[in-house]
Every structure is written in structure tokens, then in C-alpha cells.
Length: 474
Ligand code: GLN
Image (cartoon, rainbow, N blue to C red; front, side, top):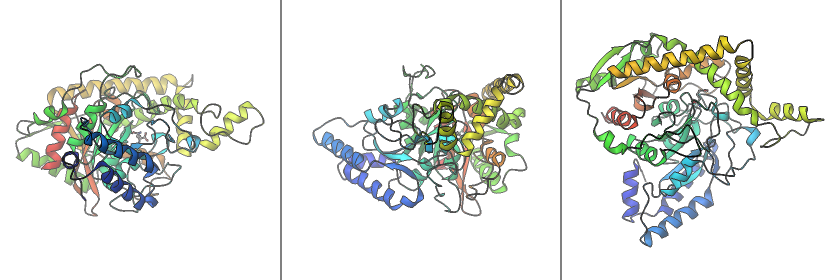
């Protein structure tokens, strides 16, 4: 059975032409079939079926179906579900079970979603290829020798392979959008503060947002609407009212739409296929009445440097809590307390996580704080000013999601700086905190997917998804 939208599934469920249990069993079978791909770290075989049966009963007894009734979902393994594993794809949390639910998870559950399991990722969401996982690589759904992107690689591969209808990811610098681009699906990072971070394991708290990976913009909007809104457990969650995203989307028309195209995003080093597909799509929209406006974002070259200073600084502080004393893995080899801390962290964390803790500790140290951390904060402010200015002139800023199509497994693991460049186009929206989405725009000469990246002003998720929907459909 091919289910390409929740609307389709919902009408079949509500007319009872299929039951929740049948749907969930179908997805679980597919998951089992793909087991060797490492897409899921844990699968809720029994719980998901029990939950589906309960939803079937509810419908039979005349209960009101929630907004996400029977939606089969996957959750990235850095988002807490009470009683389930919460590994963050790290050995240090290998056997840890969450003692509480993330707010986003509770809100999905309250609208009758069904969770199928927890998905693979780069360790603590640090990476762009899913290769930094203690639970193995995930192959790209379009070419098994290539990466699915990261860090939400498992969530993207789950949706693209039909192993979940929608998946949650987390996005600190592109981890929802970049894998969505690599797997030919929609990936949305909302405005910073739109969705509560309570229950999302922190990487860089001033950047982290829960995001949605889906087959289409309508599904992403619906799931966003359910999760968005103030939460007393997260002081950075916004009071901004949650609109009806579907009506905001419907209000967007291509006619007269002003699309800002920064020259810096189409540098000559951009992969030619990516450039051709993204420009081709922009020209299609122009032919339908949109206006393409040349803009310039001159500081773009500093995005990666500023990002990696700021997020490593925050990560070095956030990850101090994993010390072997309170959570997860503890070493066997320790004569005293100091050795217990050191050895637990040395054995429990992977290479990339250690690299970032060291880098972050360095940029925050007394002699370097002003040179690196403070400077990067100033750059962050410049980016915010520039993007605000740009979005006064245009409705949306458009460019490629990634400078190249999905790359081969192992191709970039030897050179972290090469890997960091995979996020060059997604990082700016995270630096400024604006909402951004990746939407599929076609396939390159090797039949690999390419994504378009769109950024709108703060809290304009409805408009953003409305524009993205025009791109996906046309
Ligand atoms: N790839 C980027 C990084 O490694 C982004 C990660 C993310 O968004 N979680 O930091």
C-alpha cells in the first residue's frame, strides 16, 4: 500500500477501510525488512500495536479522533519518550532510559499519533552524515553506498523508505534540512522557540530546535501546529500565538511573490547539477509570476566559523553532565573519582563529540574568550541584522540546501572541515533563529536527490511552507 499523505491515510482510517492496527503492522513489517540499514535504534513492536488497538477501540466507541489520529511516527533518539531508550546514538547513554516525556512528544500523543520507535543519528546530533553514530551507518535510500545526511539521518531515511509517515528530528545547524535534501523529502526547522525544547537532549541550546521530516508540506504543517506553542518547562519557548498553518499556506500565491536570491549562495564552486536544478526551479516560479530579486549577504563566508565556535562552546558546557556519576556509561577502570570521570568520558564519547568538547572548552578559556567566542557572538548579531534587512525587501530567501548531492560513505570522515562545509547553506538560519525548510526539487545526473532551501522571517512557518508547497508541486 502506498501512502503519500496523512490526509489520504486519515480518510481511510476514519471511513474504517483500514484499521490503525493494520497500518501500524504494515509499517513495523517494513521496519523489520530494513533492519540491516540501522535506521531505527529501537523499535516499539508491542507498544505500537497496543496503542493502535486502543485507537481502533476509541473510534469504534465513538470517541473523537485527534488531529494526528493513527499517524505512524518515528522519533529521533535524542528526544525523550518516558520508559524508552534515549541513546543520542552514543555509547555513553547506550542503556539509559528516559524518565520523562518531551513536551513535543506529549502533544503528539494527545492528538493520537503512534510512535514506532527511535531513529539513528550522529552522536549527540553532531555531524552531517550519520557516520558519527555508535549504532552504525545508515545508507542513503537512493544509493546505498552514500550517506543519508545528518544528523537526523535515521529520521530522514525512515520517512523516505516508508518506515514512518512523519519523523521528528532536531536541527542545530541543518540536521533536519540537510538529510531531508539528501533523502528527497521535506525538512522543516521552525523559528527558534516555536517548539519547546523540553526533553530534547541539549547540543547547543541557543540553536537547537525540534524539526519535522515529512513527505509533503501539509503533513509537516499539521505536525508543527500540534507541537508548537508556549511550554512552562522551556523558558525560551515563545508566547507567539500558534496560527492555523494550513490557512497561512493557502494564502500564499506565486503571483507577485518576491524571492531573494543571494549571489553568495551560487558561488562557482557549487556543484553544477545542484545549481542547475535549483535555478531551474526558481525560473519555473518566475514563469508563474514570482519575481526573482538579486540580493547579497556579504558575510556568508563567516557562517561556518561563527557557528562552530558558538555551538562547540555551548556543547562543551551541555555535555559536562555526562560524567559517569549520574547518567549512563561508567568505566570499570578507575582507582579514584577523577579517573572515573576521565575514563567514563574517554570511553563513552566518540571522536567527533570529544573534538567538539575540546574545541568548545578552548574558545571559552580565559585567554581566547574575546578573540573567538565574543567575536562569534558579534558575527551572530551582524547575521541577524542582515537577514532582517533582506527580509524586508523580499518574502523569502532561496538557495540550495547543500552544496553537493549525497556523498559516499567514508568520503569525508577523514577531514572534519570538509564535513562541516556540508552545512554552509543551512547554518545561517540557525545563527539568526529564523524558520527554514528544505524541499525536493529533482535529481542530478546520477539520480541523487537535490533540495531547495528557503528561509522566511521569524514565525512565518505558514508562509514558508506555502511557498515550499508551490515548489514541490510545480
Ligand atoms: N552538521 C551540523 C553539525 O554537525 C549540524 C548539526 C545539527 O543541526 N544538529 O553541527
